[in-house]
Structure formats: structure tokens, C-alpha cells
Image (cartoon, rainbow, N blue to C red):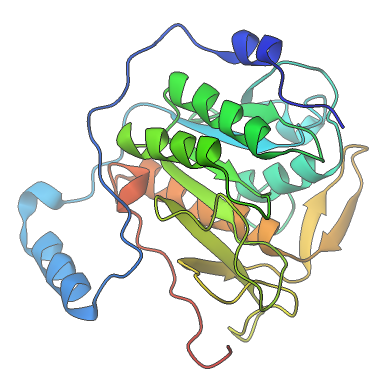
Length: 272
């Protein structure tokens, strides 16, 4: 499968080489007391009143590329090095993230931009690391990764850390690995690992269940395919897209100022 080459990296890098100084580490364990304190402080402080942001939101989607010619994507600002995707996966994921899959209200096209980084269906850690660095250089607000690798990689971990240090949250699929540990980069502390739940709030049959930071509905989800047709799919990839979508909504509404401030839905406690 095609890898994320240096030529693609160069083509997708934006003019800015500056990094954000607002760094905040995503903490895997948030105590109930800490959350309660923060919610009270937000509700009492006039300075924390929700004010919609005036700028647009840039989401870096690291996946298998998207079919940019689809009518559902036509109004969105999408940057992608190549015309066609390397597989159906990226198009399905983006349709959920943008809400153009028929399952949710769509995100406003004039407020959301997408940087699509096609790493190929057989992406390895190096491909993911290079794509993350490209997203950081582009000053993305959020990096959404609905794929992963099974083995740890120092290069990949360093790239996730650089994103964290730049104030950019990496939201990554934990994988459809059931009782095994999550995939990488989801397993790294600086990333937010996402698993899938069903309509009853229980883990999806094949979804990862350990080391999870966030969950979202990921069972029987309508998705858009590159040929314009639709079908229903399940998995942590779609749950990751849903979490990323929720973060974008919160950024646009002013509920949060940075993606790292998002407080995710907690994993089930009774379905291990």
C-alpha cells in the first residue's frame, strides 16, 4: 500500500512553521472531585461564559484519504495531495466526522477545514509519525486518527509528544482488538484513546476495553462511500470520528478554547 511519502509531506505543509505555545497535557485519570471543581468554577466565572470563536477549525484527518469529488464534501475546504483515496476507510470516517452521513447534523462548511493525509491502508508507524508532524506544521486544531499499529515506536511516540507540546490533541482509535491493549498511537499517554459503545452504553463486541479515555457510539453507523452510496458500519474508527466531531462542535460554540480541554464520555465500568 502507498506510504505517506516525503513529497506528500512537502505538498501538504503550510507556510507557518510556528508552533502553539498553549500546551496542556491530556490526563488519563480525571478525578470526580477535580471535574466537579472545574465545572463549578466555569459556571461561576463570567469570563468563562461561552463565546463562539470567530475563526474556522482545522481538523487533520490521518487515514486513507477521501473522495473529494463527492457532493457531500463539495462545500468544505479540503486539502489533499492526491485526487483519489487509497481505500474506502477515510471517506467513511470523514462522513461521520462532518455529519454528512445522514446520522447527524452536518458541521458548518464555512467554519471547518480538513487536512486529509492519506497514509495508505497498510500504514506503518513511520507513516503515521510523518503525517502527525505535517499536521503540527499546518497548525491543526485537532488530529483525528482512526487507525493504528500494534507495536510501539519511538518515532511515533515522539511525533505524538510534539503535537501535545504544540497544544494539539491527538484523538486516536483504540482498535477493534477486544480484550487486547489498544493500538498505537492511542496507547500513548499524550493521545486520547477512543473505543466504541452500542446504543445501550456497552462496549461494542470487538472494541478495545482497556486503557480507554473516551467512548462514543460506534455500532451500526451510517457511512458514505467513495462512490456516493451509503451503508452501515461498526467499529472504533467511527467512534473516533464521533469524538472528533464533538470536539469541533465545542470549539465552534466556544464551550472550549482548545481541543485538549474536551472532557470525553467516560468508558463503561460494568462491561469489561
